[in-house]
Image 1 (cartoon, rainbow, N blue to C red):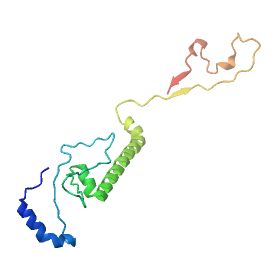
Image 2: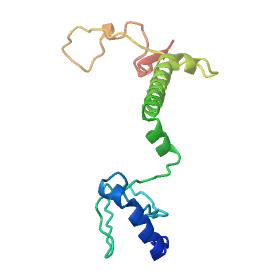
Image 3: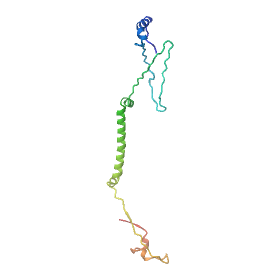
Image 4: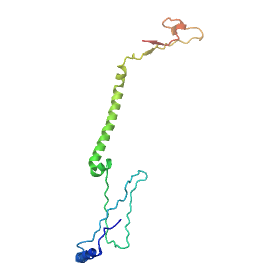
Length: 167
């Protein structure tokens, strides 16, 4: 950086006139320097930058006091978070709450009305199958001979292979 040029006569005169004010600390000699620290800086998520250090060195100047002011030009979402943190928090929380509740309501509606929606189409209703009741038979001496109580409907034995009948 470069300090603005002042002639020796101008510096001597200003120091001589302002000497009583500088001794009593009413006025401090200030030099404002605008330094661009990081142009084109990009913030990375892994690892985030959480510290910085500024070192000022000079052979001719004695630093009695120094202060630093950082000006950041935030854009987009970060500016909203910086300038309006409570409003941004409220908006983000309420929008995520509304989104989750909408998903939950859609799930409940689909589970509640799914049987009604599936029957409203042109597909036929599913066929119900009725099983024939089991008939108990008395014990017999020989298992090879047919027993009359097994066939209560008088259907031939080879036609009895189908145990299910439609409605």
